[in-house]
Length: 342
Image (cartoon, rainbow, N blue to C red; front, side, top):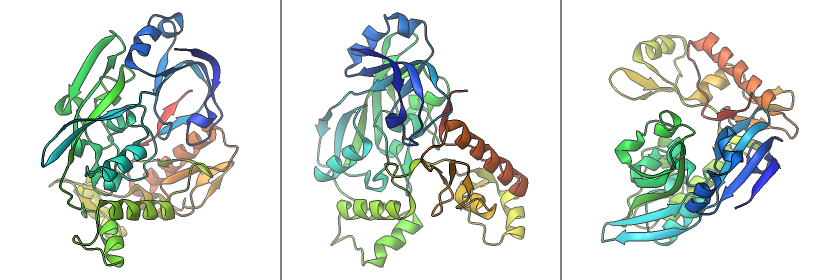
């Protein structure tokens, strides 16, 4: 294991923000982390665990230690006629894992195609798209508690999954390193068509359960995502910047009197979810530039770096959008992206 000094993070975050970490360490196996914990750089510094950098905004340099997982491996733990139990190293690229699963006829994550980032970050964020979340097939994970050095395995209930949320954002925030994740995937494929837009897109080309397969759904999701979301290799971005807010039905009903076209989705008897993109677009932000950054012209939920933006610029843009939506709708948008720095 090698600790780097003044490490540039520009190529390690999908926003393409130039920022530096005072110290940086790649973890190739769990034992590397235990060795790292014995060093002064670890013991005397604040720390942050970096995944694929796809849900991060560095608003300044990081005066501490960045720890990144490079733990590889996708292994079949158990299989029967209905399920395949697959263990995935936290350093594996999420989309590589999804594609390999489909190739081996292990199903469930077709709807989570093309989501950037590493597998280790998936349970932290409880990633999701098109009516599927990683928790839907989650079995358990293994890792190390940073404050004690204890190897600790957590099951589904212990991870406390919620919408884009988990225990790793609360009780175990910055105190747990994920080394591997185990998923319980289906052997028999059943398409998940709960998301209306995806259902429409599939049926547009004559989709039917008999003649199409999971790869067809995967490719369709990729096509839809590419029409809406910019390639971060070309335009820096972190995907969806804000969570879709959950509001009371009372507020939703009052807004419907003013905005009859307000899209909304029932969560339970008392609450509904409203698309953040609709709110941002209605507030007039879609396609707007803000210095060296702005709101993507094809999707209001995507903030973009036009090439030379500082993290602080994007952070200020987000604050402006939050204030604007709050003023117009009485709804407080919550960033999905994690801010790192001052």
